[in-house]
Image 1 (cartoon, rainbow, N blue to C red):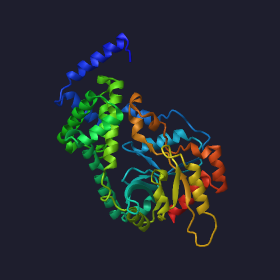
Image 2 (image 1 turned 180 degrees about the vertical axis):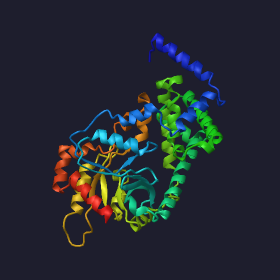
Image 3 (image 1 turned 135 degrees about the vertical axis):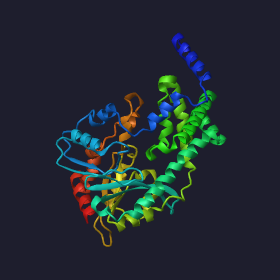
Image 4 (image 1 turned 90 degrees about the vertical axis):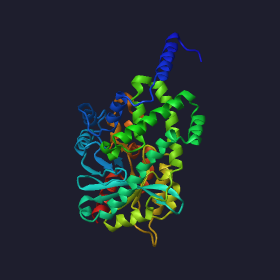
Length: 389
């Protein structure tokens, strides 16, 4: 590849910066770290939350049973929803923070990581409740979620140790697959080493929410002004592949079994939905006691029409059939993404919005939904009835 004179100068400056990059933790490193672990929103971040880019005045029914508030206060989420759907007539909005019960008005929910022992895979379940049913009845469930949350956060340290121990096999596989050069690999190892030291130094002040894999991604993104987008993009590609290898080798037996989570949920009057089932097909064969399938979300939509057919077939009147499965869709919105500066946001995640599932209005998908008599309106009514039952 032939570079222009200006590109040659930029490359030379980058190489010079990399050569002089200190392995010691600097004041600049402390500042970056403390900024990215903070869960306190600045004014500009709050403004980004309450000022959606697009409004949907024609959507009258808002169904949101799979979204993640992260560290964004509920009052800001509520204001955004009210602005996005100014003419809504009815709504069922339930947050599903990972492994943590959070309430939005009359309803509480979470997305739980668990283990399907029958086919030896990690799966996820959305569990939802009327908030009033949890008062004094959820001690065991909260303890189970706290264990799961703590175990999930331990993955971050396995991720870090891949660079700092290091786990040479992972680094070699990741560099070979992504084609990054040794300079980027060395830089990644140096930076992650700093993150590890900063975590240890500031441990008492690190919010629990920040102890997750995204900490590393966010730290590298904060270095873009110093090293440029092109180089950091290369590093992030490599780091992401290392993370994929970590997740693939993460032991599953320490998660609670899906059946245990379902049993506890049913015991306190909750409902269960299988999110993005196409990511772990065998769960559809497990005959779990669930209320419905999420047939579409932004990262699981290849088999939406097929899944609708599966549910419609299940719901055909026949002797001995259990109660009907509901068809739901999830926006899988992560509100924390909207607190990042525009140039640092993941475009694919930023466009996700609470209560926005375009598949409901897709004409081909509607043909399948009509066959099952399914609309957003009647799903809201039926699921609300089940939650109150």
